[in-house]
Image 1: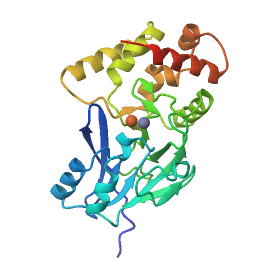
Image 2: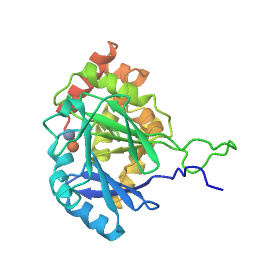
Image 3: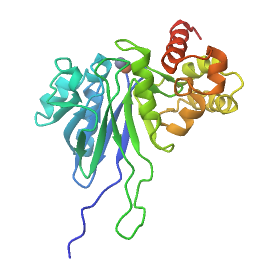
Image 4: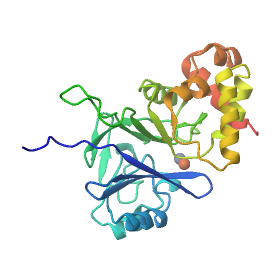
Length: 276
Ligand code: ZN
Ligand code: FE
């Protein structure tokens, strides 16, 4: 008897680099392969690949900024067969890009498949990769991993969002709106450790938000112990991140009632001026 196709839990590792970036490694021990999301630098990625004895088969880039693609070339020198994925709108801006992704495209890693979301706003070519939770088997048993994993680059941050470098508030609110409808237990792997300073701003917007105050205290304690606050979850962000709350009473009270795009734009404008 042959076993059915084995679907495995994603093993995700986080490598802190530069001043506040995270590189994420996906590792499939059954196949001895790995992939990397937004390699700002090559050295720690190659070191880990060597340690694991794994072949790096894919680079998943979210957008073209140097702190997300800076390691592409050097990784490709070591693993020339690795496939470089990024958004179709980033054509010409991603070193080594071979696959040009759009919303609804699917990318494979080992036994798992990620859905692609085109989420312009931070940049005009930004995409996210979403690995849905492992589904039930034929017997209806939940196997393995009950949370999905979202790699969203510089779009949603814990407690904040990316600056609108190339996009409009209308694009960003639409992009975040689509991500926000993913399940509450989705893990959000954002590319920077900005949580503490983001929450300082969030508290000026919603000083009466109890979940936010609690999260702030928790994050302060975690950072004082040098612990990462990433991944966060969609539930946490929906409760505490004003950039997912443009339609919530607390944020409307602070910013004024307007269209989602204009409320979001005003909020982002305030954050741009904020010095914690
Ligand atoms: Zn960026
Ligand atoms: Fe970045």
